Length: 120
Image 1 (spheres, one colour):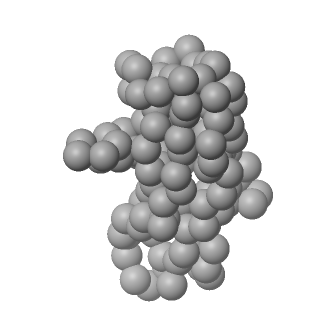
Image 2 (tube, rainbow, N blue to C red):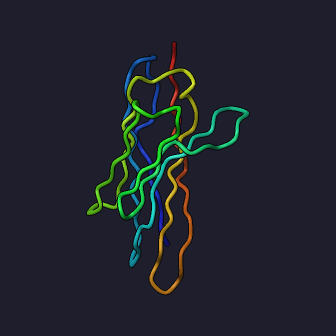
């Protein structure tokens, strides 16, 4: 069983920075993609950034130039560095991963979510 554990959310003033981490744990698996999604109150969950196993990266237009996604393959961990935070970045941030587990197939997994609140 694969699990995703997130950390790094919190309260920050507008213009500040936060760094989120998401670590995948389990056995006999390979990661195809890891990414971050967010959900603001009364809004749908949306993509923030994602990185594939071959290094392709996508960002939402709203975060380009402010957020940076990176990974540590040895630790099965993905990071989201968030700079110049704005009020509209407030929401619950979820880690998502598409993982292939030996003998079981390919599935998507979600973390439990971490709250990011940006105050003006």
